[in-house]
Length: 261
View 1 (cartoon, rainbow, N blue to C red):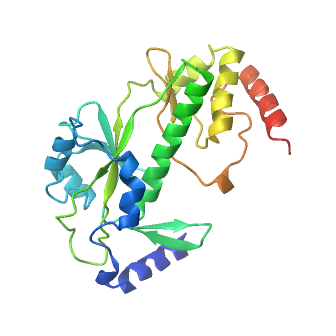
View 2 (view 1 turned 30 degrees about the horizontal axis):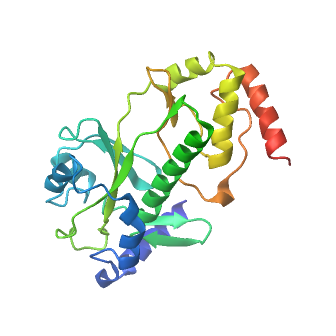
């Protein structure tokens, strides 16, 4: 890990400023176009006002812009909210978190947040299509969009600021905490487990757990985290920790019959 950070620091310091883009490429714009938040969406002008300054440069600038409950996640992603955007969650990479290490290509990727965000929305839409295909009424998903951060304002010109172009806007669902979610898993029947398994199987879900698939007060199971992981990293999930013993046994039977070793 220490070696990776040393390499990361050297990469940043030895990269000329001219290497960083100040506008997304045409290819990037085309990729994100189907997922952009509509111009007439009520939160679009609010976001435009918030990002009339470079609010996403650092954690400090996010706070100054009014963002609250900042939750840094792995790989630098920030999950946050804004009082002017009630009912919505923002997922954003600050300008300082410019590199992400790809363990498969053994390389650092720069200004590539659009790849992750498009993947998240594609996975979200895939899950929705699977739920619709089976006619499941027990499961729900928040709506999500990509917002293009205005490019007129640039971050501080130094080697630690790598301009980001996009963030995710997602509906904030009323969800129960992981402990309450695990309690509800004890109450569902085997048919419910089978339905959940079908979504898991068809969508090749990863990061499965009571923090990412949460029950709501209405009793629906919400798929709130839809990060799209590489197919190479998918491994059949055995004995999910959040299921009671009898449901774990049934789940393992489904895993064994679906993904024979």
